Image (tube, rainbow, N blue to C red; front, side, top):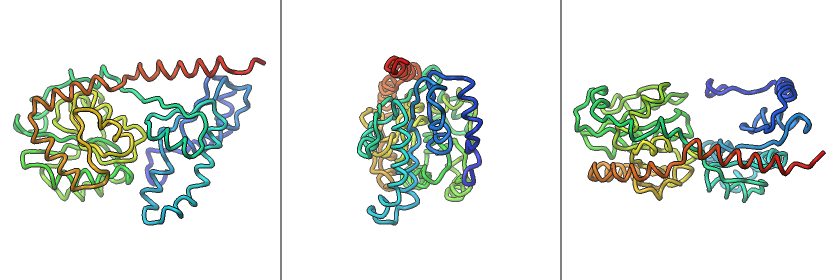
Length: 325
């Protein structure tokens, strides 16, 4: 794709149809509302058992909020109406549409999308675990003193992720003994490095392929700082919370649904000043108490096994409800 080359368009509808016919899956699941959805919807009903739709990327509200933010809401609604009609068309051709956050279910219900099921994602809790914590080794790797405060930020560098909020809030709110360590890559990386303006307390680690090392960094840091209010779930946020890491999160989107956890401090989305104050306050709290809150919160994060157990149960119900013959 032009903006982000790591994304690709599945444009060979004929090949998708041929593969489905050859494999004859019990469940044909749509994970993209673009050409992949066109291909899946065009597959004859006798080539699969049931068809489902997973709404894990809100391509309408996310991009309209970013790209059409200066337009009046009435005009935005007119421009996005055909897109919502397409989402309804996809869902009408499926036995269920799965969403990972409650606010997404409410939104899709309000737009007339049928058969929406709230089913949170899970994380690999054997990997993203508090047991990965090694605060001393992590600070040694970073070349920092043992008592340095490490603020972690993770995610894809794309315009909708609002990394500007993260960087600006850290610069405004963090004390001199705090350091921001950023994991991620993407089309906005160069602009965000420039925004950090060579600040010696901000370092960019790039994309981390080793999940165990990333989990260690999460478990061994002090605070997760997040800026995106458009997450449909926020897997990276959930993984960090599962390691016992405290977090400063926006009050909207999937990230906002973790606000009830004792280890989370919420702020009004996109408000840099409020984000900075929340970060400053959390870093000033007693480290031991903060860690205890994080450990209690980690136990509430669902696992991958929890997710798939529930998902397979839904599949079985859909398959058993198929008309005979």
